[in-house]
Image 1 (tube, protein in one colour):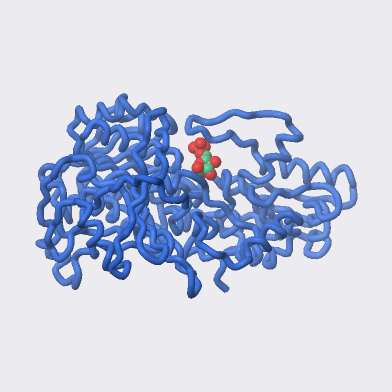
Image 2: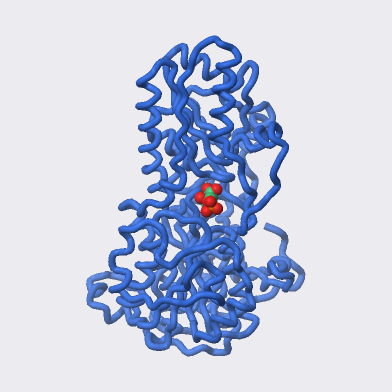
Length: 541
Ligand code: F6P
């Protein structure tokens, strides 16, 4: 965290306590945080202004500092820029389904710690506002006109999130006007919309893909916000990856600039699990599970012939989480290659020597390769491509084909042994399946967190579990960098010990890891960026 600026901007935070709404003001901020910080007055800090993606100045992040190194990275609220917006009792209080719940609402002051492994003298560190229903809401049920859009690549669970936003708004908040935007961001200004009701979305979670359609790119802020205004939409739910969430952030900024009463919520989506801060992304569990089928097939093929090699390519453009977890889950994999661990083919300690050795030992083997692995090797050998897709992602060369070709070529040239290689590319088949049971429940919680947040007037936020607790996270926190497998963490060591493959780790990685082991004197700004939280704890034994 940077140091406090000379003249900090104080941002108001609407706080409800004991069932009464208080007007957002500086005093409330003190009151709300002082209980959590031994009565001393928290400082509110504004980091230097960032530029929005279209060159306009983005509003400063809402950062609140408390005692003992407590930092709340808060999310915007409609009351930050609308004068005295009216509030209403939360209709959930009258919902029979929730009548036995001991506590309807989360405590307005609850925050979720980003760092849960601490030492005696550790600062308390970064926190996010806890997600969940509030006592007072900023929208009347019949006033709400919600819209949902899905952007970017497919991912298991998209339909479940759509379904649960619709049913949640309908059943918990009595909302009746919900539309779906057709075909991603560009659908706001170039396509039709579709009315969404609990009936129309009833079975969609059993289907892969997204009933709304999707696309990459197409983000035109003015046209999108014009369309939101023209249609009278006042809650916008945007499901998509980091590029999409950046777009959502810019939409929110434009809405705020125009002074509109429109809440914007993002639901982060990436099958690659490469979003930072949150424990994991929806669809990831399903992808790991579905990948087992391809790995099993590769194993059966390889096992059935002499010197059989099964190569399976899995998704993972910049992060190898699917490959790593699929490998660890399967135990049939002899070698896992991911973007974070550069490898080499030739020479001592190279992949080809390892393949030869493993074939001699076992007579067959399985290699799992993430699509982003070895790109520097391929580019070197092919001297090509700096092209990007409509989301700005670098277009990758097919590492599976390249690897298979090089392995075949090596054994053909050396004539030491005849191999039998089968290459399986299940990437799009994995992405297109419906979400599994655990992802379905997870998607429900994401959808509910999002709609409780917008109903409570929060805006410009994304949702996700942080150490198992759902939180409202400012957009910039999840888009500033990507989550990567840390090859000096214990999880990668577990994988290496399971496959017995060469580590390909160089001396510099080891030295850097040793430096990181020195006990920290203060919390790192990037806490949690190395692991993926409680569900995917990379360091627990
Ligand atoms: O970003 C998620 C992802 O699934 C990547 O792993 C993959 O490279 C990409 O999407 C492919 O998507 P598409 O072919 O639709 O551009």
